[in-house]
Image (cartoon, rainbow, N blue to C red; front, side):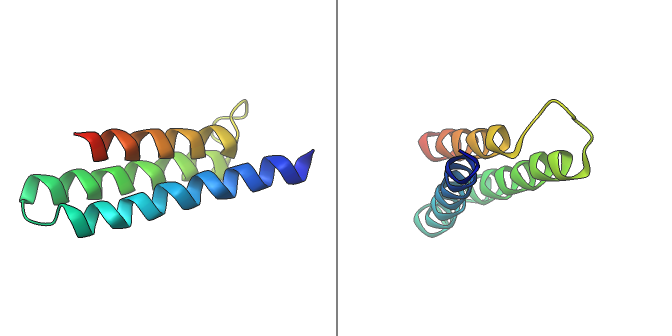
Length: 78
C-alpha cells in the first residue's frame, strides 16, 4: 500500500513539473505567462516545504502533489 502512495505522489509531481516545463516552452512570448509559471512553481515548492517541515501534521505529500498538478493545469488552461 505504501508503494502505491509513493508511486502516485511521484507520478503527480512528475506530471506537474513536466507540464510546467512545457508551459515555459509553449507560452514564453508574454511576461504575464512567465510570471504565472514562476508563481505556480513557487506555490508548488511552498506546498511541498510546508508538508516536509511538518507545519501541517494532518496533511500529506499526496495531497500536495495533487494540488501541484491542479494548479499547473489551471495555469495551463488560463
